[in-house]
Image (cartoon, rainbow, N blue to C red):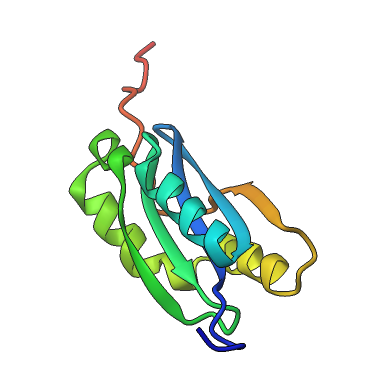
Length: 123
């Protein structure tokens, strides 16, 4: 392994909190720890989707996680498509890339949440 081949990843996870709110978790990790963090995130029961980026924001890998069963397939596909351009994900990646924080989490700002099932009350 060469001097510049050490992993320096930003691992992002979209975590199911409740029907109308998901959370973006991000962690910057290096070397063997990077693989451990990725494996933990992709196997976490509430992970809807996870992704690994390098420090130049190149997508390295990602997939749906066990939490995909908590949402529709349409939501998983939309998250996968919109993840790189989502403002919350961009903000978390920026914090990690600038090494401002080793870990960061925020509620996901997203227009793809399921519509409320509540019916308006008649008076």
